Amino acid sequence: VQLQASGGGVVQAGGSLRLSCAVSGRTSKISSMEWFRQAPGSRHEFVSSIGWSSFATSYADSVKGRFTISRDSASSTVYLQMNSLKPDDTAVYYCKAIVMGARDSRGQGTQVTVSS
Image 1: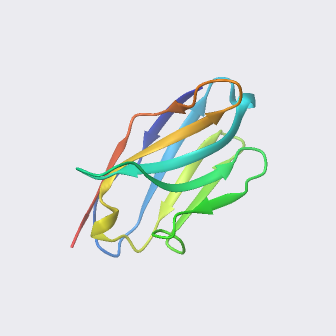
Image 2: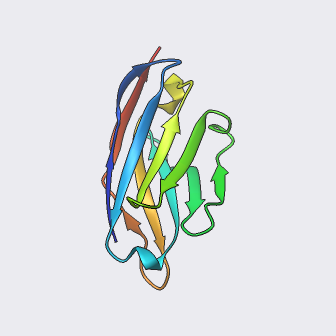
């Protein structure tokens, strides 16, 4: 499974960004997709996940009500719509595929910078 994340950028506090994660390869083996982030000097932080077949979603408390994860079945793209962004959301955002019977796959990160 190969992942390509995009959509990061610089935005003012209160603004919005939409991240995309293009998924290719053996998508039939994917059980779920996750977004996580890492700020400078911090550990990886779970942001959101979506079941590949179930479309069930979950969110970190820090983003609940502001971020929305979704998946386009036709294009195998996973999105993270981020609204009401805060400076604390500044981080490199990564998408990850949880793959059945194989190692998880992670894409390259995309930088999100929120200015105050």
